[in-house]
Image (cartoon, rainbow, N blue to C red; front, side, top):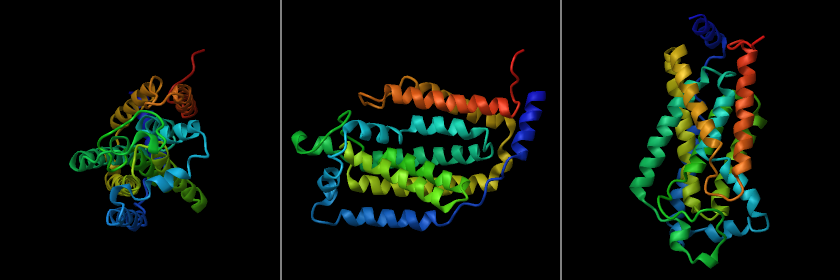
Length: 271
């Protein structure tokens, strides 16, 4: 009980969840509008794919593996664990945004059931890095996850430069999905739009319902994030060279989490 009381004090003394930043809504709308407009161009779904992927060819495949892997759900969740004790109230926004994100992206993927480039294009006409995914292309889940995470991070940052950097990193992850040859440009644009919308909805709900965050709910969220981080230790995302990268991310996030446990005195070292 003493530990729960200490955890309650830690949550109450942390920063409150701010109101959702409205600029994410028009930005999400613009990205969605551009994505839908692409479908009316002569190339349709394939518009811009070859051109955009050509810009990635001078760079090594390993670089694109690492960048695109960073937008996978497991590394993102591991990073959520690393931040959970520093921003405990914000774990509620992570929970709401994550649930909405899963329902939205997976629902749209099943609804559109769009074929991916490996299922449509000649295999010698583009560069494929990693597994040859073939179905459920729209929207890009990695891009949605990256922009969801970036949208959440912008609520934690005071610096405009930091906010722009978070969005640019998410955009680079989105572009990497074209670079590795598994998504169309429209997938990336719609994924970015979905991610920002989910972020805004998650923060909006958490801002209104932050009293829901009891110590027990916080513990449940942290346990889910911890399980995702352990999963990351044996996950490579279908790529050849990401095993060590995944272990490095997981180890760093676990280390940050344990350090914060010690710093907040939620656990005490044994004598």
